[in-house]
Structure formats: C-alpha cells, structure tokens
Length: 102
Length: 180
Ligand SMILES: [Zn+2]
Image (tube, rainbow over all chains, first blue to last red; front, side):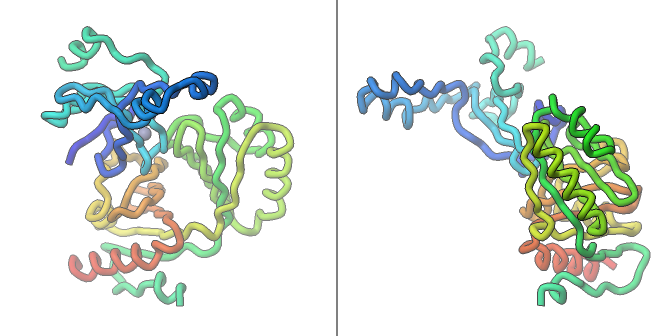
C-alpha cells in the first residue's frame, strides 16, 4: 500500500485515509474581480486545469486522519509523492523539489 | 434490535475479546490552539496539544485528533459537572462544542490477537514503536471511519458511528470465528 506523508500528523500514513482534492495553488478571484470577470474567464477558473503529466502540485485531504488539507508534489506518471507541505506555503521551487528527491 | 446486533457473542478465549462500551458522554471540540491554555483552566484537566496525544483520567478521556480538533469522552455521571464546564467554555473563548454522545458507539477490544485482528481491517502500523500505549488516531477500518485508542499493549478502544456498529461487530465476529 502507498504511504503518504501528512505534514500535519508529520507521519507516513496509509493511502486509504486520504482523498485527492484537485490541482493546488489555484487562487479564487476575489469578490470585486468576480463581478467584472467574463463568463469565459470564470469558466476557466472553475474548470480548466493543467492536467500535467509528470510532477504535479496538487491538494490532498487527510480526511480519515487529522482532517486537514495539504499540498503535495506528485509525479502523475509514477505515482510517487516527492514532497508534501502545509496549506499556505508557497509552491516549492525546482531546487527544493530536486532536493526532496534525494 | 440494535443492542442485539452490536452485542456479539464470542467464544470465551484469551486471544480475542470484544465488548460494547455502554452509554458515554461524548463531545466533539473545535478550537484554535491559542485557546487551549484558557480551556484547560476552565476544564480543570490537561488538554493534549499534539495530534494523536491523549490525556486519560479515571472518568475522562481527551484525545487530540487534529491541530484544532478534540474528542472528549466522559462518564455519564459527570453530566451536570460538564454542563457547567461547557457553558463556561462557550462564554469565555471562541470554541465549538457538539454533543455527539449518541452518534458514536464504542468497543473495547482485548486479547493476544487483538493487534492482528484490527490490522485485518485497518492498514495503520500498530507496532508499539509507532502506535504506543496512550496514542489515539482517527483512521479507517474496512472503509468505516473509526477512532482508535490504545490503552494497553493488548487492549484497544474503537469508536465508530452508531450506524456502523453492527457491521464492525459482525466483522470482528467473523475474524474471530475464522481465526480461532
Ligand atoms: Zn494528517
């Protein structure tokens, strides 16, 4: 079974405790911007995702554990979790990702 | 009917024992870590800070499930005392307390094979080094979300939603019947 490191529990926990929650670092437009956005811009925000093949920044939810959302860099081809980090932290730089691979 | 469904009869053996825990007071608590110290003063007992930590007393069990989430399990005879504590908590700090006494059902599991049997439905590493005595965690057992608390080397407490009770107890009965 795949083990996923939860940055809040600070432990590797079984995959069945987690749920995938889509691409990470997508900012919801603020209230004023929502009023001036076109339908196309809105649908882009709502539905259009990068669908990356390779190293993907995505959200995960430790729903049967500490109940927290966190972000992860996962390789979508190999299903390997390269790193996980807490909500609110910046997207890791290439250097950081490279370091985490070691 | 419900009592019959959850109260399973197992052959008496020292390898596995499963008993339903009777009525308990249960509270689900959400608050920011900043308020923990104040809450402790009002409650009069220690509240664990880190995920998985438990403070257990004679009649009170307080488990930290997440950075801002706790479960409090109390013996029913302390109801009046806890009504007062909760009223005071609500008045003095920003906190959400929900009474979930009847939402959950608790099981006490004991015996030489208890770890093996729990692991037949739960993927958590239950070795003493990684899940020591006095640790608790929310996890899954045969796709049912459960709360697992280890109160002894060969003794666990499992809490799940009431509606899953018959399913969980039946599952343990089947494991015990086929393995013993
Ligand atoms: Zn977690």
